[in-house]
Amino acid sequence: MAKRKTVADIIKMKQAGEKITMLTAYDAAMAAMLYDADVDVLLVGDSLGMVVLGYDSTVPVTMDEMIHHASAVRRGSASAFVVGDMPFGSYQSGVRDAIVNGTRFLKEAGCDAVKLEGGLEVCETVEALIRAGISVIGHIGLTPQTATQLGGYKVQGRDVESARKIIEEARALEKAGVFALVLECIPDELGKIVSEEIAIPTIGIGAGVHCDGQVLVTHDLLGMFDKFIPSFVKTYCTLAPSIKDAVLEYNSEVRNGSYPDKEHSFRGESNLRELLGL
Ligand code: KIV
Image 1 (cartoon, rainbow, N blue to C red):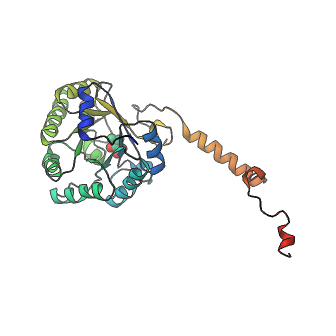
Image 2 (image 1 turned 60 degrees about the horizontal axis):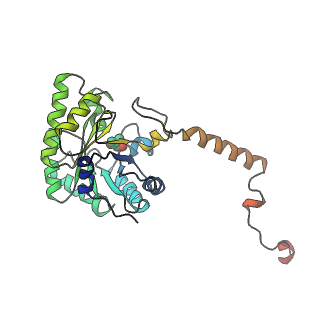
Image 3 (image 1 turned 135 degrees about the vertical axis):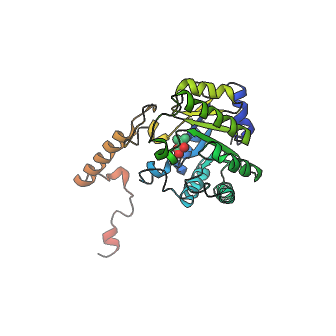
């Protein structure tokens, strides 16, 4: 088994000019496949709520749901670097709650770090988490938990004033101690500037090619979630239609009696009825 990556290993990747790959995972089976495919970081994102649990947004996701799924990812992914996403309400109510919930990700789910959304308003929380021994990834630009305050799921930082705010937030979060920073839905030129302005790695999602790494929702890149596909998503394969075709074939074989055939059945005594005296 490969040695588990550390925060220092991830920071070093930026220094060495190596791009970081991050993908979401919510269960042990997918985590094992992503780990086998050499993904650098597995994120148990609160996108769990929309992709797996059927909520309309990430807001309803609870800490217990996150711990349940993060534990499964840990069990399935051997020595992967696993990050737990702090759900809405788990850190906004104060530093103490943030530490209690961040600690749960490490102790109960075996995560290596946590991620939380927000700019200047979360810097004090980030500092407190780090003092408590919890490594933190920041997340700015489009922050889905507060998307309604940002006018919906929209590209952020398009004008000079909002671009400057994002650069200031990135600098402040780096100073507060985050070891990496997710940049979501910002113009690629701004992604480049932020990546040059801070020493820690930037992980882009809809933030252009100049970020130090990229993250996507795995179900999006595999074509398994078609409710809403953001324009920055590249669908590398389309599993949803293949799954539907396979299930239609199963239905029809069960209904016409051709499944299970001999090859997929167990054989015991050939004269069982006789032996049982029936
Ligand atoms: O919840 C999530 O999946 C995320 C990533 C898309 C960055 O926060």
